[in-house]
Length: 315
Length: 87
Image (cartoon, rainbow over all chains, first blue to last red; front, side, top):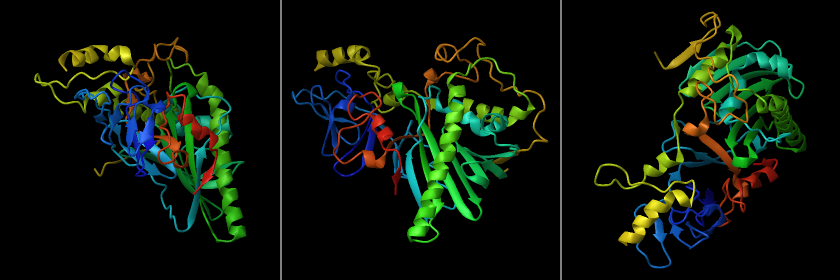
């Protein structure tokens, strides 16, 4: 759940009230605080419950997990975890004084029902570029530097953009960045995906190009470039979509041509994960036995009943 | 070592890598959450700790209702209505 307080700061917190599990996404914002729609418990910017209208003592466990948030490229980003190992990537050589960008979602022909990391393997599946997208002769080496994997080609050819000398970066399981040159024009993009519950996995994109001259002609050229970048990635995504959505994730027999994809899958497999329950436990006060106090699950009121009963009995 | 790793075609193994998926062969998309061990590990073990884009900045005004994937009001789906915003 995300909201923007009166101070203009965006915050992201656990989506469910610690009282009875009401969805805070249907609550409201009061100043910089968040108010639950059910009984008007209020939560401060640190995620702690700050007010209960009945005057009851506030349970120590009435605390939401607050996620790291970033606003970059006109997009609100939420880090699923406590400490990001890297910041939201930038597009190399991007200069806000001389370049322009557009941000939005990539329109999809149908909802994508696979997780981000599954779709992310396409970046390193060079054989599929030819078979699915008609892009020939891509077999670059891949360099890995921490959480960034990168490859470059001088022969990326697609009808939406023509021939581009391009570098492609992949950050973690869900973010990709490209930057390249076509006939002297800079073309760049950043795309990232998020699981959106029943709506499936959504893709956001930022397209970037240089504003060669700040006049009508220059702006028209930049707009054309930005729209071509969006068209390229819309085409690529929607060509992959029916295959991804019907993929049988079973036994696979990879060959030598799949080695870079296999490396990436190996990286993703070891990539750290966490659950909402783990994150919520991490902010609760330690109990006398050295364990963190049990937290109501984000899954709903039934799971929180034991701790709720304990509070009612002791207070 | 400077932390940079490069694998070239010549250095890569010719045989199928040991990291190849080993999930149950009959798993389908519908069954994925139940049967995806090994490399195609299910998300039930937790989400990847990474940055997720959730909303365009312009879709979340000061004091506006909160947004979430679960809520029916102020849902993150509002972002879908903003197709293309310049900055």
